[in-house]
Length: 406
Image 1 (cartoon, rainbow, N blue to C red):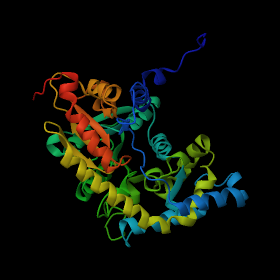
Image 2 (cartoon, rainbow, N blue to C red):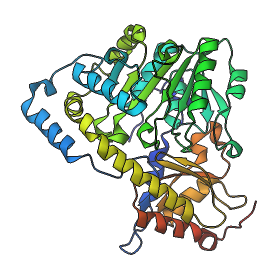
Image 3 (tube, helix red, strand yellow):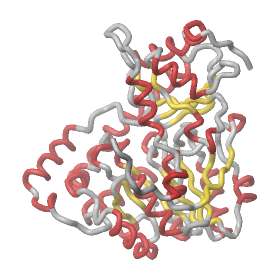
Image 4 (cartoon, helix red, strand yellow):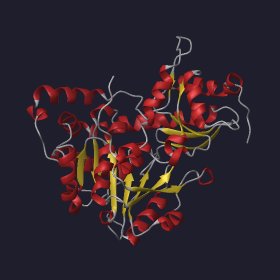
């Protein structure tokens, strides 16, 4: 096959390749059997199907509502924006001050992040990301030629970022601080006081705080924070931009729907970008969510409680020598015990030979600077698979001839 006569842009060439397809290649090499099937804990996908009432609403929207096949407002339909504003009060409390005009619907949360960053920073500007980071955030910055400034986190602090360390990284080129809580990849849940401190830092330095709360509905008992409260002396709108994904809470990742909550005065900038990138988000899912969102809260809470129990089971069952450094939301971040073996090698061999698929910390760090940590996705497997996964982890020393060390 001939190669293209043109080259990819420098920014594309400088950006890492997507990690999940590599894990899929590892998994494809495993000779699964009925007695020893593949256990895939590599990707943060919901383990439950969407609620039947949503499925029915989606089918009805597609079959009966001609609006499903039309363009709608760039910001999303008025109905879903009103529904999400109302649901925000349920999640964060009755004093929550988020209006429909503060909300924009996007084609997934990754696109929400892309649009927000494009609205804030130019090539050569800087955005601070805690490390380990969500790789798609860093990839987005790389593609846009925006410099990623790593904010190191450690197991000693439970992978929580330091406000003081962050402040030292701020320069005249810094445009935003981006946080993910519950975190991807570590699972660390950022305490409300820490989020308040980061918002105060952003406010004092004239920066945007981008808060990705894709996994907010899996913070128990909640609420995740009070940053949206009208009782606070300063409005969140001055410096906070929240991102949300419908994929995890509503088990609809294939429909690609996310959201931005930001001061409505910033909307014209975001509209320019969203109109260019998406025209409008896919309509059928918007219609179905608008009509069912309020009724789905009990189901979301039940699923969140189930995942929390599986997280506890995983922590109890991790074999001796393996260390859970943080966990929450969909993920657990675990340190393997093998001396002089990279997390990439552990993950590759566990997948190809052990039938257990996970992601190494090298995928979530600058230039592959890993330190024996592995991300496990807990949400998409059941209790039996969790126990079997831990048994396979415990067999690695003998199976692969690795030495346990400090």
